[in-house]
Length: 206
Ligand SMILES: [Zn+2]
Ligand SMILES: [Zn+2]
Image (cartoon, rainbow, N blue to C red; front, side, top):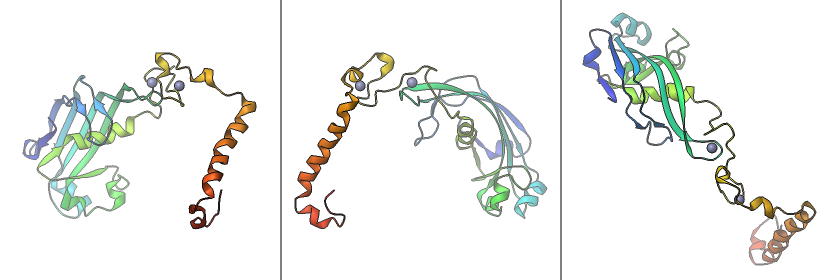
């Protein structure tokens, strides 16, 4: 289930045990939903007066409450291998049809007027996956590691250091020689700089 038809919730509150479809949460984002226990999803219709109060005219709208644990998999900050993270979600939001939602001020949409955040929808089906994206992004921890001691990738060759050393460390340059080695490309650049290109560059040869 990726959406709920408006007519199913137009008359009364409905509760679902929602099994979020496994797979990418959004085609442009690296978050893959893994199979897990269903989320609790409550949807209830807004009263016409509730809609009128915030949108200035009567119409449909729904209130949605989403709660439960969701496991998503995405690249480890250090080694970039996909790693799972279980997020605790508890999110409430109201949805208004696009034409009504457009009447809301920025502050009203963001929940600064009546404490409710408002999102637009087409008025016909409630887009669960789009709604879910918001609490997921909010719940992502600032640090995401495949394991606490992940060694990450070698900055030189990109080898996954969790799989063992790559040998780059052995080739580390004696710091006394580093300055000399840095000079080398500069000298080469100087040679190239003497060509016709240097006349076009207002900064002159580097
Ligand atoms: Zn890692
Ligand atoms: Zn390396």
